[in-house]
Amino acid sequence: MAVVLLCSAGHAPGVTTTALGMALAWPRPVLLVDADRTPTQSVLAGYLRGERPGHHGLGGLLQVLRERRPFEEAIEAELVNLPPLLSGAQPRFLAGFPHPGVVGLFASAWPDLMSALTAREGDVLVDAGRIGPEGLPHSLVTAADLVLVVSRTTLVSLAALRLYLPVLQDAADADRTALALIGSSMPYSRAEVQDQFGTTVAADLPHDPEAAAVLSDGLPAPRRYTGGSYFRGVTLAARSICGRLVAARELIGVRR
Image (cartoon, rainbow, N blue to C red; front, side, top):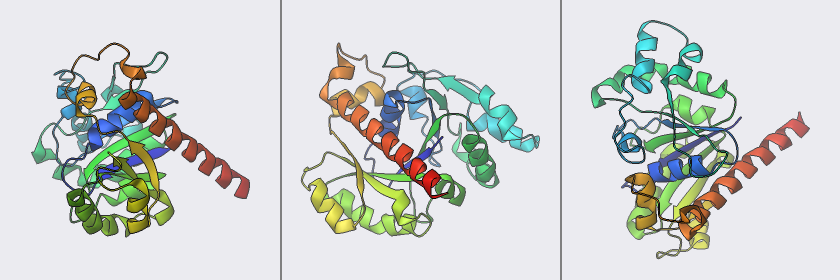
C-alpha cells in the first residue's frame, strides 16, 4: 500500500484531472480521495456527470467524527465506484467536502483520516488541491510516500512553483517530493525545470485540453480513447510512479 499526495503551487494546472486520470490508469487497486480544502466537487459534477452521493465522502466522515466513531469502521460506506476506462480496474472514490463551511470543522480529523486510509488494502491517491500560504495539512504530507506537485511549464506557473514549493518542502522530505509536468517544453523543457528547482520530475503529462475534458467535464470518451496519446501519457505516468513506489518499498525492506 502506498499514498501519493497530489497538489499544485497555484493557478489551475490540472491536479484533479491528473489525479483522476492516474486513478483510472493505476495498475493496482486504488482509492482516489478528494481532500481539496477549496471544495468544488468537480469529480462528482464532471466525470460522474452530476451524481450526488448524498452523505458520502468527507461530509459523511465529519458526522462520524462528531459521533466519535473510528474512521476505519465507517470509511467503506462513504466510497463510490468510479466508472472504469480500462478492463479489470475498479477504482474507488472518496468525495470531498460538501460545503466550504465544513472545511474548518475537519481540521482535527486529518490524522484520523490518514490513519484509516493507510490501514486499507491498496494504494491511495489524494487530491490536496493548492498548497496555499500555510502549506498542506501536516498529516497529509507526513503520511504520503510521495508528494507530487503538478505544474505547467509556463513562466507564470513556474513563478508560483518557486513561491510555494519551499513551503511544501519544509514539511516533506526532499526524496519524497517530485514534480509532475503538464505540457513539457511549453515553453520550458523537463530538463530546464528540473535543473532550476533541483527536484525530480516523476511524471511528464501531455497538454491536451480536449482529451482531458473527458475526465474533467465528463464528456463522452471518443473511440479508442484509452489508446490515444493523452490517456497513454497518463497511463505511462501512473505505471512509472507506481513502479517507483514499489521499488522504494522493496529497498526499505532490504535495508530492514
